[in-house]
Amino acid sequence: MDEPPQITRSELIRTDITHRKSAYVIALCCVAAIGGFLFGFDSGVINGTVDALAKAFHTNATGTGFAVASVLLGCAVGAFGAGRMADAFGRRPTMLLNAILFLVTAVATGAANSAGFFVAARITAGVAIGGASVLAPMYIAEVAPAHMRGRLASLQQMAIVVGLFSAFLSNAILARVAGGASEIFWFGAPTWRWMFWMEAGPAVAFLLGSITIPESPRYLVFVGKHERARKVFARIGGDADRLVRQVEHSLQAERRPRLSDLIMPGTKRIAPVLWVGIGLAAFQQFVGINIIFYFGEILWKAVGATEQWALGINVLTGLVNILATIPAILLIDRVGRKPLLLAGSMGMTVTLAAMAVVFAMAGVGPDGRPALSHGSAVVGLTAANFYIIAFAVSWGPVMWVLLGEMFPNEIRGAALAISGATNWVSNFVVTVTFLPLLKVIGLTGAYALYGIAAAVSLPFVWLAVGETKGKPLEQMKDSPRRDSG
Image (cartoon, rainbow, N blue to C red; front, side):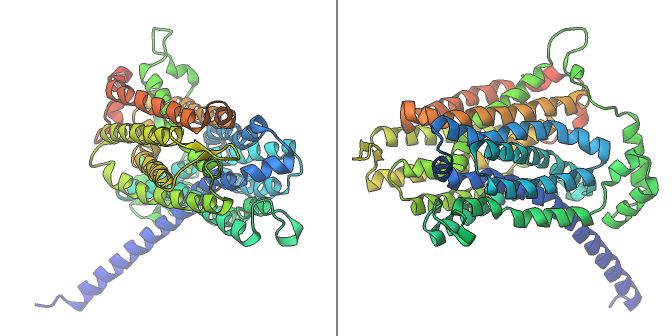
């Protein structure tokens, strides 16, 4: 009844080889996902330094807001240009350049002695962040076998939220040990500088990892290096010769996307589906989510929390963000994209309204700040975390998934470039206006505005966004109008 030992050994050998190849692919994708981690860390580290930066550089609310938001200008440039650089020079060299930018800007930002130098360093850091937002998913998609691609692609989103959480945790620990973000710490440097310098560690890991990984096999076929492509395909699994032929066949019909492709043939009108993509990209930021991540310390200090408590609350919101991303990854292929967006819009509308009401009912303390009772503070913090959950299980990951699926093949590259840049520009507008807005209409008005945006996103999704779950990408090529109505 027992199987012959030779067959058992053969099966064990094949299983071992399969596991080794799967582990190798996972390792490659984890290296690429470090870019996503740095994306999240660099986006979140500013959170604990806002007040300290204003004191160090003697900036007003507008100047401080611009210093925080300046990174997003670079993000738009990086997201728009990274794809072209990856096509021109290769995925791996572009990732190496990206890693170097992360390392240099982490050091430069912490060393800045003027607002101008700080802004220049942050804009350059933004180029790295924007590049990472494109390069990591591109490389993962091109090295992951089809049966693992969905799960491995989710590494990028998880890496981003883990990076955010790590920045919040690092800031809180440093501030607690030093006594505050403005206090002098190691080697006579203020603590806020060390908050930025902490990014150097993962940046070095990304640099070393990028040196060791192979070039994308798809890019190798694109530049005619077929033998090297076969070796990479052989290591990641599958029939290398067949995979090379498939890539060659797919490349025969490809050409570099042009912005002119976005104009509908025979008309002077932009394809309707692009307007839907632009709307999705803008609404994801207009609901104000990054205000929590960029200005969380300011928000909670504004209602009387100490710096230590404010940074601790940031750690909690970062953890909530991570935990809420997990069900999004599990549900997106089961429930669908559109239902998740609708549920997220409703959840954000309710929770933002709750936060606006809490702060509207707050008294005014002797220092002029809103004074919340213990019960109101608990309600406000609870509503803030449910708001993060509503975003993290819906608009956070789903918007990017939809942008990758909804565009017809012939306009996908150009449409993604426009939509991605729209997302970063919208992020910049919301971020740079927050502190001046806070002074004019307070937290109540700010949350009310973001709540209105969340409410308007609900009919937008219902009327304009089509469901893409289970549809092959080729089904998106016939009529852009179909997905926009």
